[in-house]
Image 1 (spheres, chains in turn yellow, brown):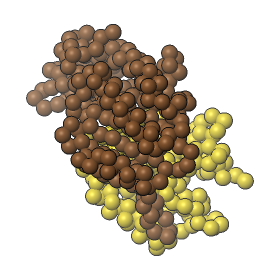
Image 2: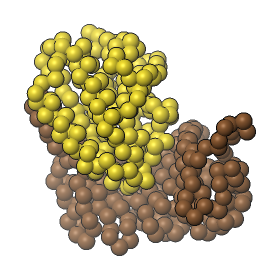
Image 3: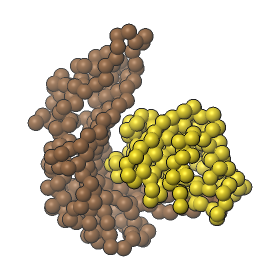
Image 4: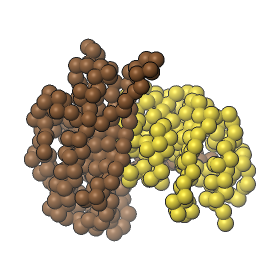
Length: 174
Length: 232
């Protein structure tokens, strides 16, 4: 499980996007970030459910996301090391997850990032895909185990970028 | 090598990522609290959310000495010791690192270390504006004079290999206006080596010494003599 525990907003190599290495090893964990880890940088894991090819959000997941929303609402204050997760970011992240889960069964790990984005991560033996969603855009970075890399961003318009779809197909190809 | 007499360090941290022969149990994590009875303890949790509901897992504990503001982060992946308020000099920090690491290696029966790191976060407050940045930072962005209005905050980072120790560095800068017409400059240097180390505190300290030397070199190259003089 990838715990993100960086602290400062400039922990990303591709500002404001994505650090392709495992965050827990590419940066060191100052105590100030662990404070954030305690209070808001928690990691959430959405396990794959059955063999469904399409996974509408179940009532249980809606409840879980509501709990997630409540948790973040409790920790919306800005700090020296972390920007708040604004509500429109949460709305976009939920929108993304809902649309994604209608097309794919492989649900990601989800975490809050110190720049105020919500991050989604898929990690398989074939590679790693990270997506960040903020109040306006979606940023993605994809790296295979053979070091082939794709990255980009686009305004969030409720459409999964084709590069992301290709990456998911590759990561989970039999 | 220049080091500052009054370094404005808001956090100095040493970290090891470790391996054990069997998975770390929650009881081991909780057990560290009893050895630090007067320290404030906060559990660090992982939440897993899924269709079946929410599960909470213990990831580690953060222990803070309320007086000295020293912090221990003891997790299932890494151990870290920080001085967040009273960092004075390496000669004082070093034995504290070794003492805490030594205790940790023994109590958790650590078999190997696979990453060591130092992270020093400095926060300078100086008289000036972002237009004066060249007085303070040797490494800095430049802006075209035709820019309609100058920026009022800057955040940037660079990463680099450190061939001398086969490590890497993340160097971050955050510059912003501060109250009373001051300029706040945060310089965050994170140096680390991902390799296999013996679980021996004395040997680890030799490697930390090498990392510290590289950290200081980076520090020196980032700042101008004028800034160093202000805090020297």
